[in-house]
Image (tube, rainbow over all chains, first blue to last red):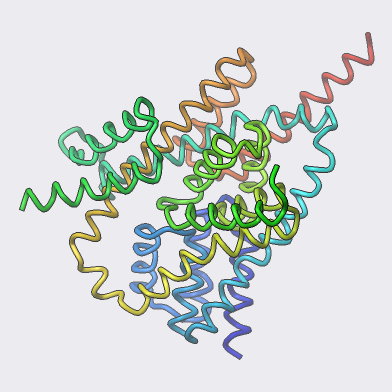
Length: 187
Length: 189
């Protein structure tokens, strides 16, 4: 029964991918390409590309993409449901524990050590996004190899956010439109 | 605070809207959730939001989904968690379904790929701005330990590519050790 297989495969992906985003990639490949042969390796690479270019987590995108390809819309629903079920149960449980016990001083003091690390991890994710934007997938980071258009757009966006207090979503849309406009003028 | 139904409606609409614009991974939706629910609606305090983010990333699964669940649960219990998760999944589900059907045409469209490429720079700017605000908060606390943890975690994640789950676990262990030492000292006094 293909729906059950899709559900169970993506349940494992949802359950064992810690750390989000790219951490899930090898797991998805293991299930979808190696174990079941639902996608070829080149289709899988395409899927990662789509995931990078569209909103949404890689795991959810993969569940939808593979589900549709293998068993249509019901397949996509079964795979997506499998993918989010572990999160629903585990996260809700931890959140319940947290809201119930957070007034305890001991827990507060443990969380005090965690908060600065969270800021650092968000910063690190920002750095990797910018490195991909400025230097693409090239191995070397050089001044000459920098995508200057994107670097200027980035600085402009920072300015609009910090000084102009502009809505972040409009800043992102503007960045996309600017880049397309520059490339149209250039050609 | 508004009644539960209004909270759920607002939660649904804002998570749906944010999820549709989450380019570039789970941390982006986390920063956007913070902007919406902490800075704009004032439904969640800043410190509490950082704790919720920590929960979202220490549990398995996609950070965007986990983030929506914790925020939804905090605001309106199980109903809130379900509302947030449905709203978070609809945009990627709809977009990927369409793309799966029209992939060949989508992939070769130059304008679309340029727009998406430009949006990466915009996303980077949004994250930089949020990190600046949060990082300034940590530095202003003048706690040497906090600043050290922030610097060490950044180097571990960014330079050494350490999986974030290990960083979270290490900080929890460190925090537990610090708390125990503190309690011992208090007892001796």
